[in-house]
Image (cartoon, rainbow, N blue to C red; front, side):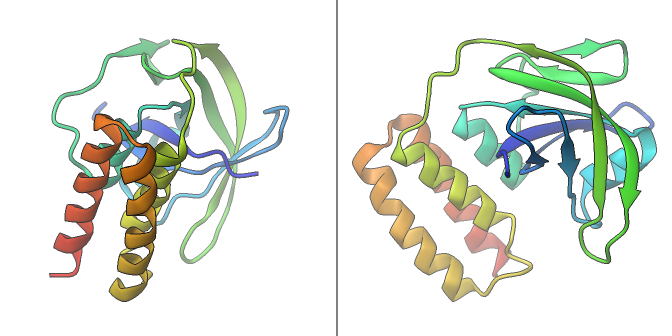
Length: 186
């Protein structure tokens, strides 16, 4: 299954990258496969260091900011053995190391082993507005693959869910994602 998450990685100089990603996982979380786009910073970082942390998080505003590249201030983090960076807001995290690459022209697969894992604050949960923001974040990261009309149509459908069930965080995240999509097609 795909587990929507945030992934932290670092380059050779230690510069942190936080990106939304949906790794493939099994229900028992014994295997994790990351599939970054070759054009992404995450891909370059994974090639450089072979390490990342997969975070289960219910902060959809942070997910939206990561999807749009607008994280202004680094969220609370901690370093683990100078190899992995853990987001303190994550309800669950898995520090992984790549054991094998399977090449692909667009999105290679990094098969990973879990080296460390832990928990953070309790998972607050999702509502339909939070789910809508996650779907919108996925769309906002696919502007190079999808036509504008398709993305706009989906945003209109998702806006209804945010309006009905979202709080301030969901509304702000959705506005941020919509603005990012608009900028991508100008």
